[in-house]
Structures are given as structure tokens and as C-alpha cells.
Length: 322
Ligand SMILES: NC(=O)c1ccc[n+]([C@@H]2O[C@H](COP(=O)([O-])OP(=O)(O)OC[C@H]3O[C@@H](n4cnc5c(N)ncnc54)[C@H](OP(=O)(O)O)[C@@H]3O)[C@@H](O)[C@H]2O)c1
Image (cartoon, rainbow, N blue to C red; front, top):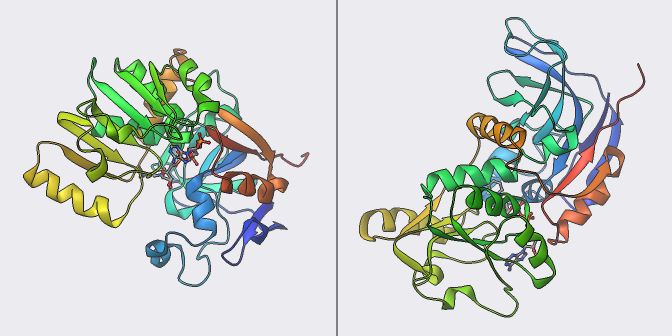
């Protein structure tokens, strides 16, 4: 099978298109014929061996796993012994976690991991765009226990998590303020934002007592800078791990009526099911910026490295004629 292989950390040019053996499903596993994968900010970081504190898992000096790729959408090709959840031919989408391997024509996953039946109406490209940002946005909004009528600010509203957070928070009945550059205001308004702020002309942290939830999807602020912007019992959410959030989570849990929160969205089954239902009811739509082919993985990563993508970057995996 064709796969994108990486033998060292570095820029987008570390990727090589190779022919490698197709994996075999073992006990409780399924073989997925991958039709689409994606390039997220997390994968662009992992390609470079970042963050450094992740190296014990990623590999100290070179990638432990030569195949990157965490999100997939495809069809079940073969079931291993005792794998019964998905019959052969089922269209599935999911997340590999740190096992990776989705930058390839075939992938083996445990049927009990983050894998679910795709939304009926969705293409493979649309389904794979639901896996990273939308599931993470849902995970954090549930963690904050966002309630109808609350005011939420989404920082990084034009990114993968951000475009989903704006839609989901509006669907949950919150009043949404989206923070992104002016060129993207029209798009985030169309997704459901009630108010917009251009971070180049206004520092949202200078507005006091304004939001019940500040959701920083891109890690550009801190709890300390945002705490005056939060109303009483406000929650500050960060998707990006750093020393400050590690300190603020336990301190605010013990001593403050405003809370800092962090989490890792890793087991995504609940969120995949909820997103499937929302997409099938036309209540959520993934935002796709650009679609590349598997052979164009270096170009796809270079585009994500620019830090300017809108929503999601999808990679189509063409299958050899059989
Ligand atoms: N904790 C978890 O479970 C988890 C899960 C997934 C991802 N993550 C992490 O979450 C982070 C965000 O991921 P993502 O994929 O949503 O990001 P992304 O799609 O790469 O974000 C790109 C967007 O960021 C915006 N941006 C850049 N600088 C900004 C600033 N100073 N203020 C506001 N917006 C700015 C850009 O908009 P403009 O062009 O308008 O600037 C662009 O549209 C990554 O670090 C990722 O590793 C965490």
C-alpha cells in the first residue's frame, strides 16, 4: 500500500511517499481502507517533535512511529477475530490517538477505540473534518457545562476547533463572540457568531465582566490576562498545555470562583456520535479550507505551518484500481 513515511523530525520535506506492506487486523481490530485523512496543527507539531515534553511518547530523537496521521474516514475492509461492531463495507470515521498511521491507504484500529459509523449524508472529506476540531470543541464545551443564555468568547474562531466551537456554542443557545482577524469575520458570523472582535485592533481581555466562558482554542492568552473579562463563576478553557495552565487549573479549583480548565480530547466516541447526529439533522457542518492528495502531504503541512488556515485541511487518499 502507499503511505507517507517520516524517519526524522523536521519541516514538511521529511515526508516520503513509499510502498509498504498492508497491516493485518488482529483480535478485536478492523482494517480500514482510508479515503480521507487530515492535517491538523497537532500533526504539524508532531512532525517537528513538538512539544518537547511529548518526546517520551513521540520518540526522543526520531519519530517512534514512521506513519503520522490521527484522523481517518474510510470503509471497513476486513474484520479481525472477534471484531463485530462494524460489518465489512461500513463507512467509518475516527481518531487513532498516539498510535497514528492514517497517512496511508490502509489502517488498523481497535473496534473499541474512537471509531464510529459516519454521518449518512457526509462525504469522506466532510467526515474526516469532524474528527479533530469539532470533537475537541464539543469536549471542552461539555467540560465547561455551557448553558443556554450564557456569553461565550471563542479566541481563534477561524481555526479547526474555533469554527466548530462557534457553531456548537450557538447551537447550545449561548451568545457567541468570535475573535479572529477581520478578513474572517464574515465567515464566523455565517457560522453563528453574534459579535466579532479583530484581535489586531482590540485586546478582548480589556473588556471587563463580559463573558461566562472564555474558550481560547489557540493558546494565545492566559487565565491571568482573562480573569477580569470573566463574569462571576466564569470558566477559562485552554486547549494548549503550558506551565501557566498547569498551575492555574489546581489553584483556581481550590481558591477561586472563576476556574481555569484544560483537558485532552483523546477518547472521542461520545463526541463522534453526537456530531454524527448533529450533521444528519443539518445542525452542524464541518468547515473545509483546502483539500490535498496524499502525494501532496508536504504542501498540506506547509500550508498548516502558515498558521492561517480556516477550519480544516483535508487529505484525499486515492485507492489503486483493484
Ligand atoms: N487539548 C486537546 O485535546 C487538543 C485537541 C486538538 C488540538 N489541540 C491544540 O489546539 C490548538 C489549536 O488547534 P486548531 O487546529 O483549532 O488551530 P488552527 O486551525 O491551526 O488555528 C488556525 C487559526 O488560528 C488563528 N489565529 C492565529 N493567531 C491568532 C491570534 N493571535 N488570535 C486569534 N486567532 C489566531 C488564525 O486566524 P487568523 O488568520 O485570523 O489569525 C487561523 O485561522 C493547537 O495547538 C492544537 O495542538 C488541543
